[in-house]
Amino acid sequence: MRKQKPVADSFVIMTELVLPNDTNTLNNLMGGRMMHLMDIAGAIAAQKHSNRIVVTASVDNVSFRDAIRLGNVVTLQAQVTRSFSSSMEVHIDVWAEDIPNGTKFKTNEAFFTFVAVDQSGRPIDVPEAVPETAEEISLYEGALRRRQLRLVLAGRMKPAEAQELKALFALE
Image (cartoon, rainbow, N blue to C red):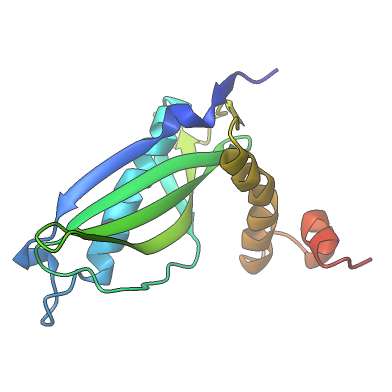
């Protein structure tokens, strides 16, 4: 039986100030820099859950809703939603805050997948993720569908084998 761990134990909050070196010529945070910050926050959450070294396996669609401006404070919140044998899905929310204007708004959201590895880089088992709140349960329940979609899109699973996706669309 796998060890169990509450998903709340993986929760991470990371805060950064957008400086000139982080921006493009329009003084907006560069998308690649945002992805870098999301990768770090997600990796920390996955490490907290697994107590292992983790590597990034995949990134789901990342939408850039609103520009994050020079001088804004960026807050990233990351938490494991579900774990499989050696992989973990991590949900990441990104918020931007203009402190002088007193405004805060959500700018990004994504799911990253990390794999726990041993010192030789081979995948290693991770604890089972246990959701407790209604939001954690909702994210946990959707994780299997998102995983199957990732595997189908990557060519690692045949669409006919994706039972959760078939059930979602009532295909049989």
